[in-house]
Image (cartoon, rainbow, N blue to C red; front, side, top):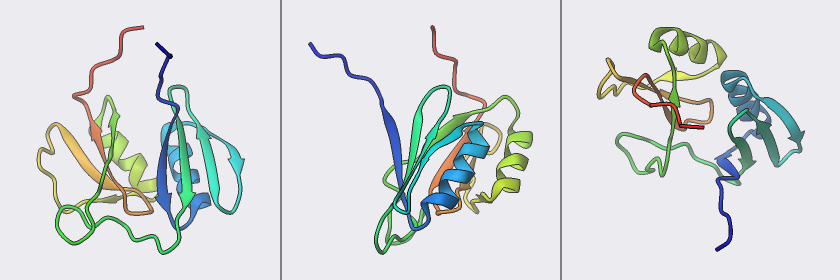
Length: 125
């Protein structure tokens, strides 16, 4: 059987440079490719891409006509510190917080929901 591994997570957006810069800064990654249509961010665990999509509209989660389709869960050791850094970089705190003692929901600069959580275990090497 062929080997399969997660290669990259791609996020649609209107402004790949801005979204790529946000995620590179938040995840401690490095922008390794930039074009008008695509930005690639390399982190120590995954590649993340920001891809220009014509007529992009941000998800309207938790209610509204545009579902989120997917979101990222980020493992953190301190919710408050991680939230402060994400907000400083351009994230926005969601009005909906289902379990703020365990995880916080934020929106990236393109409107994609993502969670900061202290409840994600480390992967075994």
